[in-house]
Image (tube, rainbow, N blue to C red; front, side, top):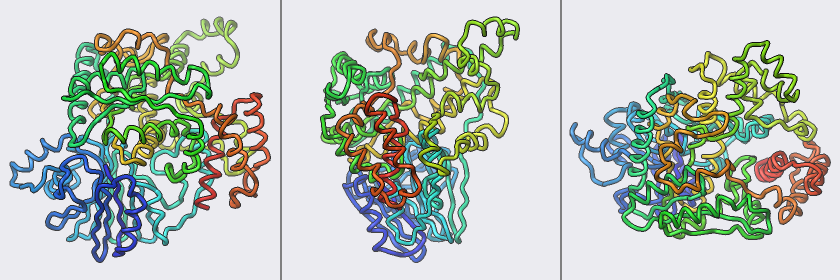
Length: 607
């Protein structure tokens, strides 16, 4: 796992500065390459082939590569390349990528199983090739304007260049408020984009062409439940086995939930040494036991599998310490309260390992969120005869009846998934466009006929493409890579993603239970107490932090003179009133307050 940088002109000093901006991602080695129309930089975190032979940028004939990530099937691809005459000087997956591109051009990406963002410069064609993994686990940002391209693993790397137009699109804050993330290619900067998951790009002669190379289209149900269960177990076991391959120590983030417990079970069976696991809890002064319930479960599960378990407590002052450096870590305004424990957990884990496995993706692929159950209720309700619905309406609260009668799939998704903040426009004024999120979703995900008539299945797939990638995975990447810690996510092996789309919803979720089939598969592998737990999600006591150690900090950040660029734009008096109400317990305003605070921090730095 590394940091990559590049642009389409020769400037050795700038590429070195960009490397320095992302040096935390790869402190083991640094390298650069410059030519008349290309500069490439790389910061290396050594995971495979720790020798100098894995140094980047790596060159072969007319091709030069910088690569961030891991290719889990690189050994099979190497054998395939050797059969057609290629020879190798290292045992690195980078060299396989480089020679694979030489052999197969852009078709290379369709052969890859891994987490990756890489750039290849073709000296002969004077052309850049960029690619990002299928699911979007590794990020890649780029600036494109006036025939210039600048790319980096982080927005901060891009902004190192002095000739970047920093014009922002402030209205996009509505997407962060409503969707909890900036989806797809969007950032707060008009000319800085994120290469979307499953996409590649070519840049030459000042022109950029972006293509989607991976888009599952097969949603047809596999009705043989035994076959589905067998395939899930087989693919996930293989994914864990592949992702355990490393020349440095590997551990697991054990949250206490089903997903990370399954990964711990499979990894402990693969590991030749006692597996290291890591979990984080909160000082009891910050809240009741709901914030530590999974922490205690993780302790029991670690003992059950006899792992070398490491418990980290987030102590008083650490939330404040993180918030003071948050903008450097995340690059965007955000609502990521769990970034704080993720950050400190990553710092502690790095002292023991350089690679961790996580349980990300299980809820989206296998129906773990209650919102899928709510959608199922709506679907079933709307299939009832009108006469029966009229009778039942007499016994149901009006607000619930309104939800049950939402006919549009787009409106249902917005109702069940998006936040609805009544105070947003009062504070952000014209910056908050209340229909922006709905219009974005309509244009990108509901414009054409849906690929399946099973809306709950599409709901999960839409969450996988938006919330998972642009909120959960970007948070994970930024917090782990702050300490050069590589997180791998076996459940998001693209083969498992494709399989999940073909599993009937009835096997995943019903009115009373979520993630049904996933639990069935592993019920004999995990301790029974894990299956008696309610769905909690990963919670941080951020609401209480704002009433305690972050209170003074929050008032300072929301002061009129904190960020001059926002003084005459935001209604900060109203914002402070909202903070007053939250602190007093009169109203629960965590989501919007957190975005306001991060907006102010971001504005002070970038505007």
